[in-house]
Length: 471
Image (cartoon, rainbow, N blue to C red; front, side):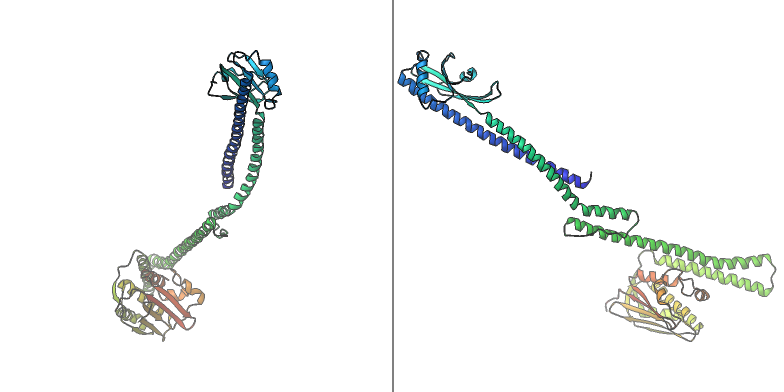
């Protein structure tokens, strides 16, 4: 069942029960009050008639013994008295003999059996015509005994009015319930509009469309729910995008890895088959063996780079105090032969500063940045390694005067196997894993790695590391 229907039906049930009980009690209390008033008036009338009748009997000398003989005279006297004229009552003896009667209604023997000199009573009953009669009875005390006086009052109007009130109440309830049903359904439908909107957006999210968002209006709980839902949808979309990017990078990584393996393996297999199937001269045999050796070394370097890349991304580093000035100078000393061998010059300018980090990983970071600068630089140019303390921590920069990197490629150079100039990188023995490894090492140290480059002028790689020890 829809929520709007639930709200409507629940409200109608509450309205129907509260209105029904309240109206029923109101009508019943009103009827009971009117009936009690009629009973009080009837008993008061009976009391006055008894007193007046006793006074007349005392004046006429009527007793229980002679009440029947003087009944005609009493009837004439009572009919002529203004107070008794038009009154519906009856006077009888204990045996039921009628002394006086101005009503044709039958006597109630059961009621009279409970009457004594100090008490009176009443009873409600219906006659053969369906009228509701209030029958009151009380004692008429004479010197030698007691007579019984009965009065009859028609209270059918009270019961008729009550039935009319019930009928009016039923029609009112029907009208109120019908109007309230329409109003509550419209109100519930309007109130649940944001919830239906959330449902539609959730359905679209479940179907793979992560762009829709719920409309937020007002400041109630539903709008807060919509805002929370939108934040959740943003997080889901971001996570899905990250997963898709990760899957794409994984596919690219696999494709690049297979490609990097295929080229040297093709050369190795080809030259090995040539050595196996043909008799070659000394120079040709040496050339084939040299190709197999160089391509094998290339595969070895690739496997070592992959191993370092995987190790760098696992677990937390074992941080300890590292003097970055000494580390920079050591990295320059190790890289200097390869840099000088290409006809480049190297300058190292590093301030001493102690920070918390993994010295082996940081050494690998610096050497990879220097090696990357060496590959990009042209003979006769200069590579500069600089280390200095800043407000953010310790900043290491490696600048070269090489070919530079196009602006559109800067965001991709830290992806595994990505190479801006593939032919140049392979000629230098690179596989496109050095900067990816650098990025992981920097991330492990909660630092930042950024590149600034200008085509034809060179590139600057800047690493900022935190965790500097206080002086």
